[in-house]
Image (cartoon, rainbow, N blue to C red; front, side, top):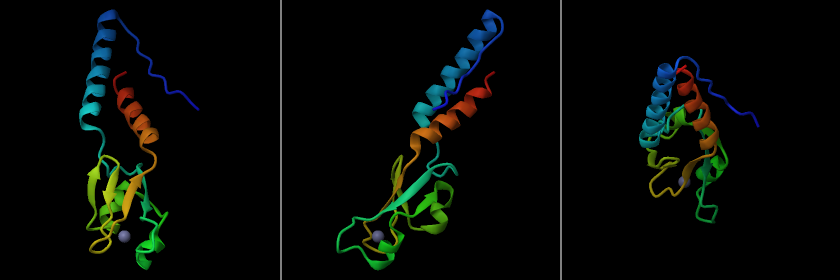
Length: 118
Ligand SMILES: [Zn+2]
């Protein structure tokens, strides 16, 4: 596992400014997070895996899709948490799209934002 390092340098006052910006970015991300529709976020199609699952949903089980394409492929999908959508393939559909790489993508996105500080 690689460790992303953020290197700050300069005079004491410029270090203080850079650290202030790091804190500001971290606070903003804690409050707002990232859009669930980021290209890098990957979702898997999950059914209830019981006898009532319809054939069309059963055929989608396990399929992976980028957050950027959810609305295109599932026009009736509704986001109900930071990492999950009701797929709504048809009326009464119980299937969800569940994010599977949240932590890895958030780390990369945040690191990219923090690099702009230095
Ligand atoms: Zn379904």
